[in-house]
Amino acid sequence: MNSQTQYDKRYSFEFFPPKTDAGVEKLKRVQQELAAKSPSFFSVTYGAGGSTRDRTFQTVTQVKQNTGISTAPHLSCVGDSKSQLGEILQQYVSNGIERIVALRGDLPSGMGASIGELKYASDLVAFIREQTGDHFHLEVAAYPEMHPQAKSMNADLDAFRAKVEAGANSAITQYFFNIDAYKFFVDSCEKRGLDIPVVPGIMPIINYENLVRFSQMCGAEIPRWIRVRMESYSGDPTSVLQFGEEVITSLCQSLLEMGAPGLHFYTMNQSAPTLAIWDNLDLS
Image (cartoon, rainbow, N blue to C red; front, top):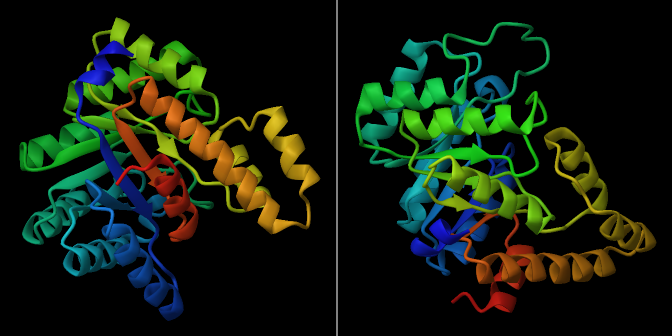
């Protein structure tokens, strides 16, 4: 963890593109409440196979204009051609976007083996550098508990190395609850000479059923003690929120004390759970 302590702490919040007019109005309120905390940046997700491409672009530009805070679109290469990706990049350059979260992306159902011209996130990072030079600060994903499709932890670390060597500036992790997994991942990167900030991704616990579903999809382990406590609060959403706030606050506090270079909150387009953790940590 020694190399991570050299970086200034940075805090950021992630949104997803709203699907309804009500969702758009809600996000306007949420982004203003979170903008008051002066984050380093916001990020906006990108659906499987580019399925939210237009809404991602609209959300990114709207958030940036409304808050004045740097806003980073997620961009994945699955399902898109180089020409399509090049057009998207030029749109972002033209609109003053200076940060991108570069991902391989997930295949949407029905796409089969059609994965586009770029196969891996490292290919996308290299393509962005080829097309736009150093215009963008490039974030990439990191998986302290291993990517669910990786053949081994070493293979996953090799994939991470490829992204760093292709030109990634920093990384955001998949959310996790096991601090040792994060520490071991960062230490393993250090041993391989991969010296970029690896910022922990933080998932506030809002709904236990949704957390279980998300975790099964992304390979994040929910420790048994958290599962048992959550299951005991079945039908009591207030207790779920209170317990979740306590667990995630403690996790964040420990990460910052051990030298993590910041925190990236997966807000699920809600402000209250994230703000409660923020205030508990006294980050302002």
